[in-house]
Image (tube, rainbow, N blue to C red; front, side, top):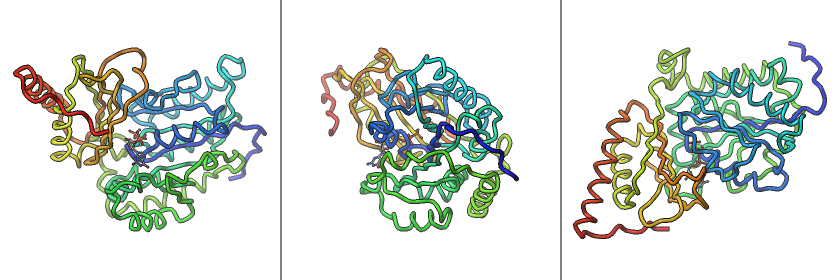
Length: 360
Ligand SMILES: Nc1nc2c(ncn2[C@@H]2O[C@H](COP(=O)(O)OP(=O)(O)OP(=O)(O)O)[C@@H](O)[C@H]2O)c(=O)[nH]1
């Protein structure tokens, strides 16, 4: 295919992807603090109806756009393309702060190939934007297993220019060498970097090196080859060949204060029992006795230490928990939460043990 000449001054787009809970938002938040990234606009695409990532990012301004959608490959032709065009026209009319770069954070279940191909071939977008690079986070605790089991994880690594390996600092990351070996087999040309060593320079590449359609299809076929033995059955599931047809997102909005001890017990039991099928839990909680919201993150069986946020997002003092599960019944999960919360209330009103404080 002969490449058509592209206009100069295309706005570079960093495509940030990586499996659920692998650390995309954490990396982005840290790198956006670098002055060199101060003029980056951010598009966040989330799976599910209650978006939390833009709150967890702690940077809310006109240049952070949240796209809520089922999955990226279904919507990039619509929503992401529209959002990029809108950003571009708002910039030209000075309606939003000027930006010199766009970072698109995809959902953890995104297949990046259709999205990359669309941004590159879209008749309007291609004269304003160009993919600078694809940065993929892989979690040292769960990543190896996700690559064995999830086609999306394989395709994400297959598309990467830079693979950022997260959570190597955690005790649970026991076999980073095997993960590195798997990554180099799947995508030998991607640069690998440990999260702590990643910097804004990993994003600050210009948009001059366009990926050809040939590159896309080669990377795609390498991923298919890698994935073939394990994932073939997934291709027969779901709408137009998606690997995540039984995966669903649901959210719980809880008006009453939450007892930390009861919550901890409930989450631990849930993840011990069903961690294989709970890809992601994230929430902003209104904890009894705490003024500020507490953010919690679970990724399969791994629960990260809770973090106090600086303030209540959008002024609503209300707990919100988002789940992404494979084949579990949301009603039963919600019911079990209320059982635990009621139990702990009872213990308290009957003069039982006061709730333990969180560890950190
Ligand atoms: N110890 C440690 N924790 C990390 C690291 N990277 C991410 N985390 C934690 O992992 C959890 C999930 O991180 P996120 O940045 O929200 O992951 P994500 O990929 O954006 O998640 P989704 O958008 O839901 O797919 C949070 O509790 C983070 O603090 C890391 O390198 N080390």
